[in-house]
Image (cartoon, rainbow, N blue to C red; front, side, top):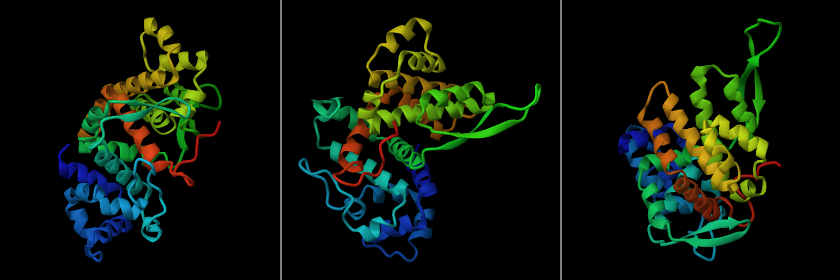
Length: 304
């Protein structure tokens, strides 16, 4: 996607208060900031990545010894929407990775080992469309529930369907929706399954490791991901993160394949499917550096 289209994507999510915060952080007039920036959305990419905006939202820049903490400029940060917070964090990660040669990998709970894959992560974040994708993904989980249509209920032969609310982080129940929603809605369910797999492994990898899928649940999800039978047994025994990566990538591919209309925005999903591990590693970096500072995290851990 070109800069104008990506900028429009940012403008769709940013509130007028966000736009005023951006202008104020870079010492620009705020009175007409919102209408001007909405008329010139391509300017948003540079503003969201400006170090002054990061400091306005998160406080002092992070160092190797001290991750960023959401304690600076509280009056301005209180105006920021979740989307702006996460967009700023994503852009900050791109800036940090530009000067890094290795990034810690969580090889076990609370254990970090360096992986020299920073160039690949920089390349992933080199796409403005992929940066927007990650910001939208993170913001979409600020509320962890959604209503979906379930199977028809009532008397035999009735075609009515009722709505039910389930946790989006329950992958097994989410995958069960594929048997109940109309065919036209399945692409959306596959997309959200991929989102959940990326979110859990990117933001809460320790949780994903500690609550690995049992063999029955793993088998159900592998079938839901349309993994060939000959691969299912091998993947069911894979480490939790590897299994989630494979499932998430496959769900994104299926969402792209079933999409009734292949837009430029949706094409990013197909890109991430082929670079799922890089997306996951970028989110690990963002979570460690910005989302979980000492004290007050932006996200609460998933319920057990």
